[in-house]
Length: 115
Length: 115
Image (tube, rainbow over all chains, first blue to last red; front, side, top):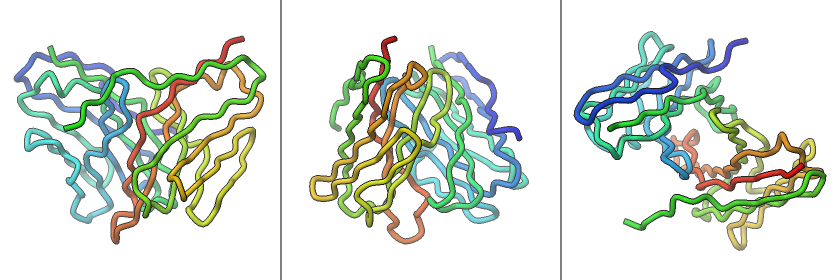
């Protein structure tokens, strides 16, 4: 079946503009995660959704970052007034349930470049 | 904050040799560990996991060793192949009560397999 998909695959934007990144999780997966991967770094947790529960936003670096998950499926990560330090690969993952016992499947990521 | 280098640790091996990739984890209370493989342009892919009540776990051509005394994790790849060339990440999970989904990733090691 289809894996996690993300769009766009690449996004170049000017400093100060807003961007929206999209994630389509695997059908039936109730948990969805966003991570950020800066050049040469590991993955940094941003936000997590589980069903209808309140999301865990503890990893969002600033109030310029927000995310939604509509209908328990597709998620959008929005970055307002982008800064150059926002340049990174943004990865989305989903899992059957919100427990480490269930493997997280990652999408290919969106590479964001802020000029 | 602490400055972080942009250059990943690298390991270069000959095809057919065994590879050992090391990881020092941060939290002595972490009770679950995962190794991921990330090929260029793709999201991380699960390789193998281990719980803290184990010292060793074997998969197909891979073995993970856990040394809790020194907070060290290693991934051994037998008979390394060119397709094993990728960045390898370790990740740890500490269930602090309600967050048994959150992973903390290491910075990764670049493995290059020479034919």
